[in-house]
Amino acid sequence: MYDLRYLRRDPLATNVEDAPRSKVDRPSHVPANRVYEIDMYALDGIEGGYHEAWKKVQHPGIADLIWTPYTGGHWIATNGDTVKEVYSDPERFSSEVIFLPKEAGEKYQMVPTRMDPPEHTPYRRTLDKGLNLAQIRKVEGRVRQVAAELIDQFAGKGECDFSAEYAGVFPVYVFMALADLPLEDIPILSVFARQMTRPEGSTPEEMAADLEAGNNGFYAYVDPVIRARKGGTGDDLITLMVNSEINGQPIEHQKAQGLISLLLLGGLDTVVNFLSFFMIHLAKHSALVADLRSDPLKLMRGAEEMFRRFPVVSEARMVAKDQEYKGVTLKRGDMILLPTALHGLDETINPEPWKLDLERRSIQHSTFGGGPHRCAGLHLARMEVIVTLEEWLKRIPEFRLKEGAAPIYHSGIVAAVENVPLVWDVKR
Image (tube, rainbow, N blue to C red; front, side):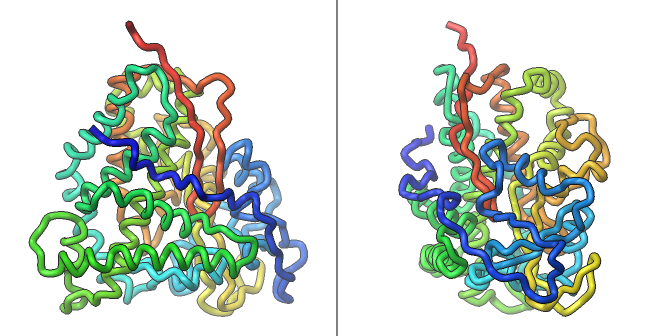
């Protein structure tokens, strides 16, 4: 059984939304009619939902690129085509800095997400060794066991806080098992993950300090782990990664720190938050849940539609060279935010985007990023979603949000939601 003492929530963390935010002056190359006051860490209307708050930006007539004075000043891609194009063109839009504010992104050191091809390519191949579909299928039994045991702990009670008791635990436990790391380390690693994806502070400099602390925390944590497993023969993810070669040579220690830290960050934050978003939706739509129960194939195919409907990442790219793009002048060093929600919810690409349609075909989204940096963990994420639904519906076929429930949404590089009380009838 899994001990809920190791929940990821940091009880001392303050809400970044509560901090007063600083603004910068509009640069001379930014047209005044492209300026919108949008704070990616404190979206207007977020109390009504993270995706709903971002979708308000996508009103008729909005330009493909707009600019905000918040978070150090940056551009925002407002539709699916622009998000996809920027992700897909590293020659014009570099991964040299991917987090905002830029001052914070410059402190981010993880490998290979800050690299562009061709430097990026051998590191990505190394990641794929441990996270390719064949490797992930080997661990499905272990993943399913974790899900089943967690759900069994509360299925008979008729209620749970899904965010705290399942979503915040399941992907983390799975990853810690795959990496062969002790469960008691989860709380401190979760603090580092929060610092990086939702850094606190009212100025770019303060946010940079918080993100750097998280980055350094990960590096310090993995340092002795890497040294201990170098030359080892274990089958865990970390041993596999640190004993790989880059361009025919053993991976450098500092690069290994970046690679393993990236694995930890992805395993501790992204899927954790995605699960709660789609369960809130299912709890409000009993007919959709019945549809998932009735057809196992529809459930498996429906996972992709859920990823389209509930993306949680808003990372950025840095303009690699001066250029004209989408009717504006971009200067090298400018930052462009890519809210993946604005791709999946773009009705010109996905008709009726708010509808979670299990029959939808030609699904388009950037939930896993795009281009050379498309998420290496996508196969594990898909498995975790499918296994969660299968094991949950076996034990809890019907459920709903508790009356008066008020989920709390947070925006940032990775969005989050907490306070997701679900209830269901228990046969006595």
